[in-house]
Amino acid sequence: MIGGVGIAVCIALLGFLALKWGNGFGRSKTPAIENLPYPVVVIFSPNTWYVEYNCSDLTTMSTQLVLMHQTPPKLIDNELNLFQLDNLSSTLNSFQLMANLGNGLSPVSFDLHRIRDRSHSQALRLLVETIASDLSVVESQQIETKIQSVETLEDALRVINDAADHSAIRANE
Image 1 (cartoon, rainbow, N blue to C red):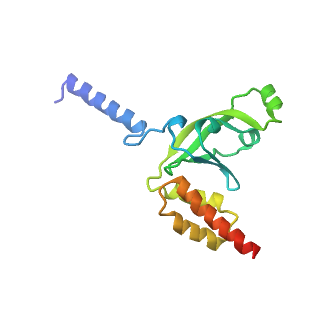
Image 2: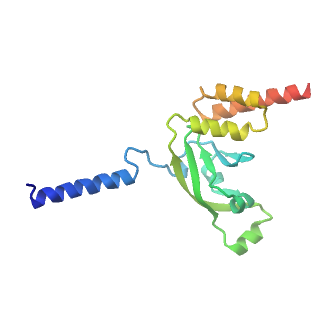
């Protein structure tokens, strides 16, 4: 028979495990945007993406994209970690937004959440689908094959740019 102390210890242990499990037991923490390895790619849709090279650029985005996005944008950092930008919104009030529309940029806030992708294959596939969307199916498949061996976002962007350059040369011949 377990005494009162034994039950209390079991309850405390179960509570600890539940807390750890609920907070992503064994999962790495999402870094602050200042600590992300740059550059990063922010993807709003297959045809709407851009590269950011530092934290201050990431905290200012196109007002139109911020107001019109329907699904949370994705972010891929230079180590090919995949994130989602939840609760993306402008930090400006309505009057400031109207005054700022001519500028086209708005300071933003968002919650950065890591998407589990240990092999980086999901991030690479999303990158190819997004950036290489204007290329032919064969060229996209070639990029997807070449890109599997890259270790950084910068390397992946080089592979895609090289393929796009070759595609443009063939189109002009």
